[in-house]
Length: 343
Ligand SMILES: Nc1ncnc2c1ncn2[C@@H]1O[C@H](COP(=O)(O)OP(=O)(O)OP(=O)(O)O)[C@@H](O)[C@H]1O
Ligand SMILES: [Mg+2]
Image 1 (tube, helix red, strand yellow):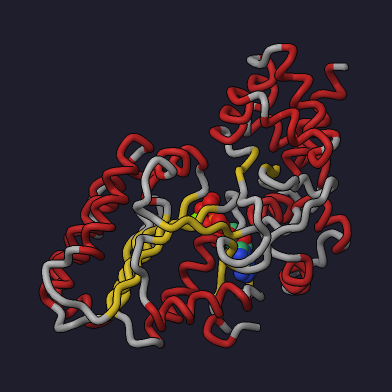
Image 2 (cartoon, rainbow, N blue to C red):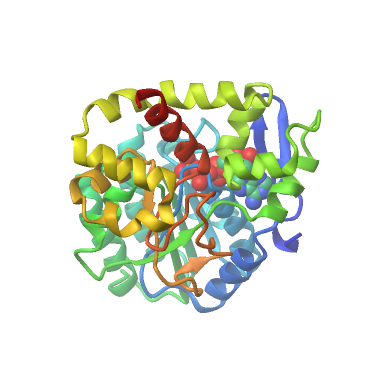
């Protein structure tokens, strides 16, 4: 258990909290970042439900421990968790912080940059950390580039001298990544689903036991959100698959594909490792699947960085190829199910 985040509790279901598990390498990465500061805004990409918010909540602790004044903003979060600020931030900008508690998601995301500028101005040579959760989803993909640039400006041309600054954005959607790849304004990292031993630690904490670890691993690949869904649906994998198919409107998605695209998708569902180069040639299809948050583009290199914490191995069953992966094996299974039904 990583000591800095020991005791951090996260929701798993109604009335069920679990303790933050593992992420030793991720915590070490955060500690090194705290030591150095960031010269660019850092964007953490990763599958929906892989644990980005969990890591940012852990980052709050690591950075506060390292003497940072921390502002955590999650415009799409629940009331009470949308804006969390360190004591000195509240002292320096309490009125503004209070006012921001009531604004809509877009305004909150936008105000984060202004608040950081104001804090740099008001705090004396601060160590300031800005943790921005899901802000790209809040502002919309068309404004992602300008937003990233304004954060870079804050780092490069602050209103006053600072000691250190850390800016981290977490995002699960791959379209913004494509937009950001047109510039050298951010550094992009990837966080993967929890590794197998962490999933086991999580399962041990869940009342009623749940699934056998092997089965949970094959189904979720360590994705916390899919695990939550399984828990919600009484550990019924069949029902979970059907729920995913309906909720993600996978039938309609497949209806909209051409015959060639369907064949490429079938090949990538059956064996992602073998069919990776085939599907990568179907640019429009890959774009659609990335946009639908079923697939995610991942760094081809498996060394760290650009990975935070353990990178996934290339693995057919888990749906992970070299540059492209299913966000969780459950999606691969769901699409396979539909394609088999149609055959
Ligand atoms: N390190 C962890 N320790 C314990 N549980 C975790 C951890 N990471 C994720 N989880 C579990 O997985 C769930 C989903 O994680 P989280 O909300 O952090 O994902 P996310 O990547 O932020 O998803 P999204 O992209 O949808 O915002 C958590 O509610 C928690 O139950
Ligand atoms: Mg999140």
